[in-house]
Image (cartoon, rainbow, N blue to C red; front, side, top):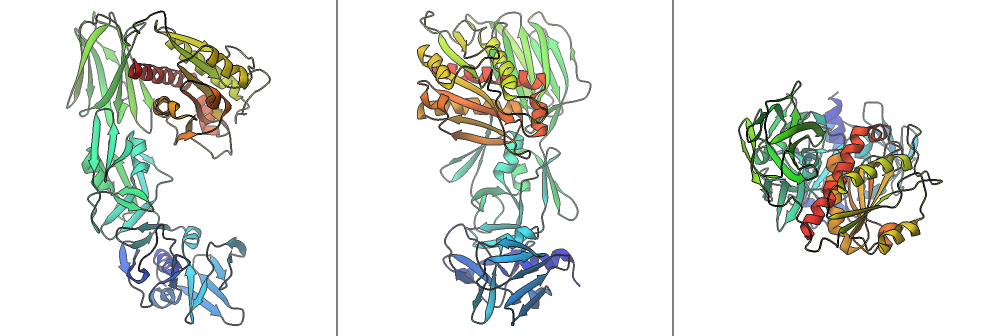
Length: 536
């Protein structure tokens, strides 16, 4: 008897592939099992826009136990690993170990041969199944894993083709902090000052992106060359690690700024805050080495704070509190990043409006309150009590800016109605409106969402979502549109955030951490400052 994995994937060859685009010539389709192309001697058949493969191919070619009972007109498949599947032609109900399941397409008898469906059966048996449209190839293989900076991605399929293992670009880019964009026929990876362009690979090549199941997909080896990372497979090619992690080993104050020591050349982004005057630097792909501390003194730097701002993506935040509003420059070299403070700026950032009597009005809306507790958390906590302190942190930071007027829809455990909240913003002729919420669903639901309703709100919501996902470190569930009353009826750019899922024990625990709340509050203030600076 052959190994189970060989039997499994050979068996899967008998099932139909649900092609995401119309198949022009089914017989020309390639079939790849565990990276090797195979050719059944009976051609595939196109049925209801789905390609069907004959079941005898598995039995004859690979020894999978497939039986046909002519009396009951039943197909029985035994994977020799404790799973028995039975089906009948023209019947969408199949049975897996006696339990009924519904197929998308029923088995068919064509020219005295039985043809069977693939994808759902592949899911039952633990297959990774993919469709490479450019190469007209169906691929299915043993499950393999990919880890980014030491964290295994549990929802990231790995597709094995004859010319490499491919992973969906979004799956590995997000934990590294990259935003994925499409420009013409190229894909752009962008984060801070980093920007990489990836072209589409030719028919059967690995140097570029491919479209697998409609997603951009690349090999870890190719991606590592593009972004300067390291990709390694274990000996039997079942697990890959993609590593672009660097450690900050020391921070020192100097006469004209600070120096940040690291194991390699760091990439970063930065912005400023005032009251007090601060420079905020986010180091990408970074972690703090154990025992890191700040040494030295400087007449220009009053204080230096640092923290592991987020994991997945790995990001270290360093904040310089300056003795005056200095201009600054940042230079990065291998092993050292320097922040050099120069002559004082004539005016602090952000630039004030020409008419100081016309402030930028910000309405912050902590959701629920009073008799409306909002969603219940896994620890017995309530949404209303979570979002209020986060909104207050945002308020306290923004109120330090003389250009801003900040209005809270509630500052305590009260319940302004949805109509009240909208009226507060509209009557104040607010410039932006931000509503704070936390999500609820099943215990397994997880991630961060940001919502908007009108076209004028999209840019503001996009900036908010970028800062929010960086702060939470939760799964990015995307920027979405919705008809929520407060974003639909406010007249200014407005957005509603769902920080995480209270019903998810892990996310709920993190959201209750004061350090997490501080980080999200700061992120929302930074988002509003960024939007303001874009408009003034």
